[in-house]
Image (cartoon, rainbow, N blue to C red):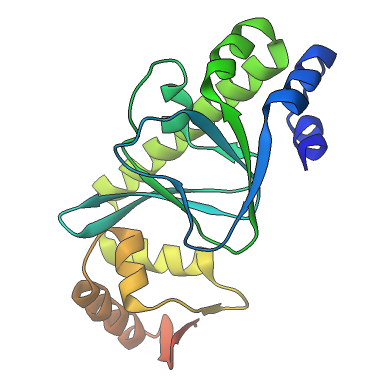
Length: 204
């Protein structure tokens, strides 16, 4: 797994490869296991090697999805904490069984950014891609009606036109209530965009 990471992100410095093998560790998580907890000091940078991680905030008993992390990605908020000793402002949990995480103590991350060009490219790429994604998400929130965001989200999550998520799960993903989601789903079904089945949603 570590060798795959080294190749995928393009690490070329032999000394950095040695440091990764010496100082990094790999853990495997079950779905629902915490990767990061809100309000905890970040001592280890977590990079997803395999699986998926859900990053979110909780506000007045409502979960607000920030983004998902896939293979070879890390949380930008955690990465930024490596350059300044601070607490996490988000929760992150494994969204799939057998999610594999690379753990790097934060004391190395800042030094590697100054010493190794390939590591510096990796961190800049993470910051840039996360910035563009969050800008896009902000634009959607500001200008796109929730009904349209819900339908786009269903399309993005569909497997052979089927989405297996509860109304409550959809509400968490989109930062609203189950009642609002149920009402919007009925509207989409009335408009013949979806069909509501037993514990699943079909995209028409």
